[in-house]
Amino acid sequence: MTKKLIQILLLLLVLACDKVENPLPTIYGDFNWELYPNDPTTYPYDIADPSSNWTSNTNEKGILLEDYTGHKCTNCPAAATIATQLEDDTALGVIVVSIHASTDGSFQSADEVEFTVDYQTDAGDAYVQEIPGFIGNPMGTINRNDGGYSNTNWYFSSNWATGVNNEISQGNLEANIQLQYNYYPSTNGLFIHTETSFLKTLSGNYHLILYLVRNDVVSPQKMNDGTIDHHYHHHAVLSNNINGTWGTLVNDSTVINGDVFYHDFSFELPDPSIDSTYQINNLSVISYICERNNFNVLQAIKTELGN
Image (cartoon, rainbow, N blue to C red; front, side):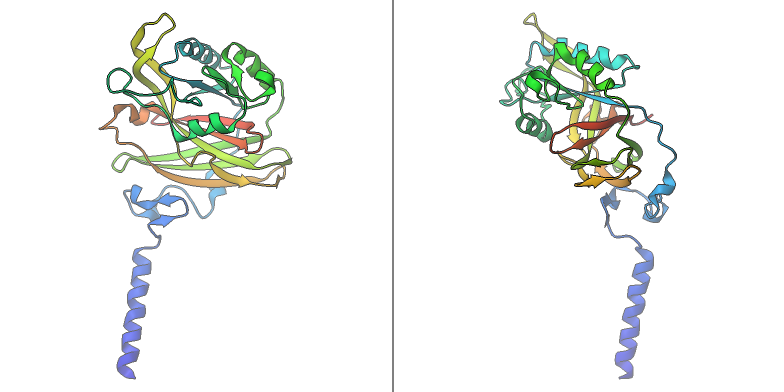
């Protein structure tokens, strides 16, 4: 009995020591701690008390303009110019993302000779299939409101400015977002923290969606005059969804004015030594709150990384 008791005590001691040395598992919540190069207990964000990491949210209304484009679409460069002009007018609060997608993928297809870069994403392909009314590139959404072509979520580029102004006229924010991040180049690890606050009592199915965007990528583009611009600057290219096509469920019924939600994510970025367009100073995260049933965007913000 004495020998068995000693064995049990030794086992408990080993387990206790292991608990002290490894206070957090490899996967903790949505974090992959293998992407953090130091002791997880030193991580510079209080996960246990997330509210302590934030100050008052002063973000103004953001208008997400999703430009559905393709490098073989000859009318798309003109639409991209319209989108950029709207974004450059800082008084409007427009946030542009270029999504290379269509229902048949003909304008987005890559080849081994000329259009070697494949910009298509699973999320972009899903959106043109699931959001009703898409009829071809270039089209876009304005906070995915339903004031577009035939009262769908889709606008022709000639109506993007009107859609933006209509969105501005809708008035005050109903929700707001803040984002903090930490980046570790030795692991290509990106750690993201968000605070989502609701400013009005609402019923719906609300999701937080995070886009990984490359700010500028140079590659061939077919132009309206039939030529190919081999040094075309593709702007704000959707390159991945950090938390999936339809993001993270925030609340699926009713949110009350004043409700606040916190979410944490880790993501391994593509190696910039293999693809230099993934250098951290060429990346941004666009975060937005979407009502899943009607696709409408309540708020969007853009966070430039590496600054």
